[in-house]
Picture: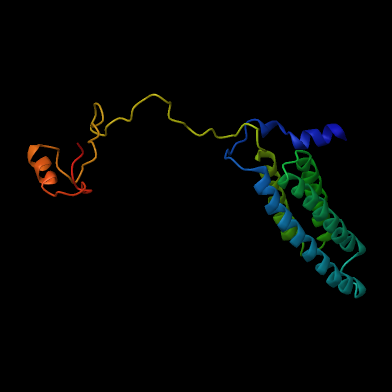
Length: 199
């Protein structure tokens, strides 16, 4: 059992997945937590309608059992997703376990003539969520896609080639100190004003 769960948590494609993008395990965890809670409520309400159909012989007891298994799987998925949100690495294993249990519930709950499309949609949805859980990363783990960083110590290059243009010093609105400006300030006879050039 441990070997099987270890294989599910770290499948062969985990080191080099076919589709690479950076995904935070914490962000994915809170999204899955909300969706799994809503899924458990939806399945629970659907189970009430299933009991009504069971009473009239439209469905079998296996369909009702599938509903119960599905609710249990959603609850386990919610717990594991919450752990992922809290950056607990063990949450991945619990989330994958809940995902697998929920898929079993989907299959059992739709073993009828009209449930083939629901089972097919469940296969696709389970595969997508499972893939996202596998490629998600916690803080401190290496990212799948490394962002390029500009090396330090290299000046920016001009778009026209060669060295970049020299930066011009900031302009002052008062003129450069000279004899005429100094004489003008002295003619005030009072304290130096803000626009007078520095001595």
